[in-house]
Amino acid sequence: MTDIEELDTRKAKDWITAPWSDEQVENINRFQNAGAFHPFTCNCPHPERNYKLKATNEGLRCTDCGWDQRWVHVFMADGSAMANWEESMSRLGLWPF
Ligand SMILES: [Zn+2]
Image (tube, rainbow, N blue to C red; front, side):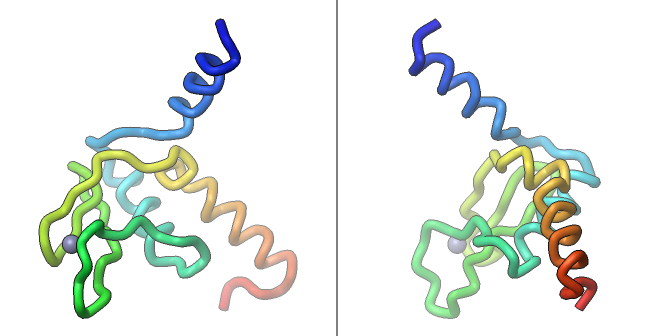
């Protein structure tokens, strides 16, 4: 296996495609709405700047134009990004708000 192939394999393990379970959808939407991370956004220029994508079982959707994306990072779907963030914040006395 070349270095490039190994890197591609590692990257491939970092994302997960829809359909997602209800629990995964909940985790993804918590990530999208936490304000702690940059959320996935729509590709279209929406005047109201309301282009944050919303997770459904079938994928991420823009509620404005229907743009969809069928993958997220594993750490978004499994809740680990939020859990790590909450743990760090609570250690600093900054969570819960
Ligand atoms: Zn859109």
